[in-house]
Image (tube, rainbow, N blue to C red; front, side, top):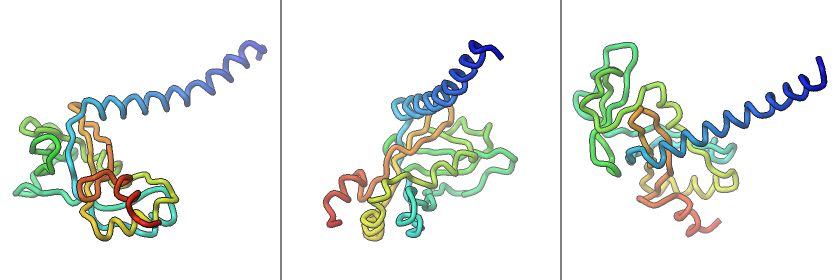
Amino acid sequence: MTDRLKRASLILALALPIAALGIMVARGEVITRSGRAYRISIEGYDPRDLVRGHYLRYRLDFRWEEPRERCTVAECAYCLRGEAGSEPLVVRVGRDDTAGCDASFPETQLDRLQQFFIPEDRGPVLERALRSRDAKLLVKVSRGGSVVIQDLLLDGRPWREVVQELPP
């Protein structure tokens, strides 16, 4: 290989991961700015992960619309019905049956909603706050069905505000 080809290969090898990261950040920003916001209750926190790592892990506590299960096909989606900013009614439907939904996202994206990044030094104080407060996620769902977590709310307020008021 010539020096010119080696240099081009090195630049490409360095630029691709940076470009991919930039695309991921841009995608999240587009969804955050243009998506429809909802509040989803969470429960079942895992305190071992709060103290040990950078992620809060929990289960989503959807307000299910009856009947709860309508999806009988291989690819399902979560259909959300309700005003933006509210806690929506949720039903599982076929991925192609989302016409009556105010917003929807594929079931394959559920995993990304079940953990929330927190600074490691905030784990213990956040653990105490979660035990005594109503916890919800503020999520945004795009028209294309992408979903991102915008914030963790404790008693309707951003978690950072709440833990600042608590003793360390």
